[in-house]
Image (tube, rainbow, N blue to C red; front, side, top):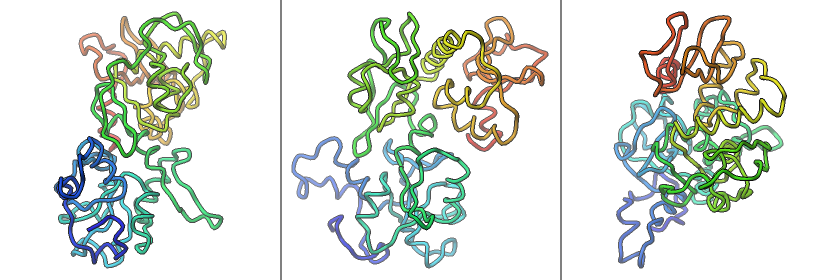
Length: 337
């Protein structure tokens, strides 16, 4: 069966990912053959997917699901519904075949007769995230497209492995051997103008070109702007963020006041889902504050004596007069882990 089969999803025969890579049907398949097929939509069993807090992953690639077969836990009209979250009632107890893709626009073209649309529950979830440019609407306010790369980039810290990684939709995720410039760069970031005489903040110019970015760019700007997903190890990302904050403080001439806007600009991208959740619960935080000798709080509320630290901070040195959460701990409590 070809991927251009126009029959509705529930009338198609099951296809397996192994068939897509059969040497009889594909001559000399490249390492990205499966990734390209996933973009257009492939049929899998639900048990084939890795279930994450923010979605699903298949062989390292973030995917959404659709084309669920009718069962007691689904409804007849669910075939054309696209599901983003495993917490969606339609898929929370689902077992059986379904379809998966990593590109909303591509799969809409592959299945034109199914009129694929986000399910109402998942759409409310997407609205609650308030991610810029994630949803595209027509003039009547109806959602016509989801920018899946932006979604995957926003949750990259939960979706991908923790080593340096580069992912472009339609390709397999690949390790990055040189994430940053090898020597302290003699330039400022072309986006935020941060600059400091140290390494570990400006990304490798070759990697920037692969991501369709300016060659002179810091990690934090690259994480937020690339039409790819760039993943830095947590400790490296935190170092780049503190260097950017130091540069921002020098530009302003003083330390910024507590502000969600500042926090969103200077924390590593992997902290943004937590930031968005905390905005609905607490007032603005201070960022990168030393709350005890050698203890850096990424987010803190000094008047409340509360702070959030990175996961690898040593337990024995935590201050007793502060209520301190590790990132993974607070994410778990807020349903993000």
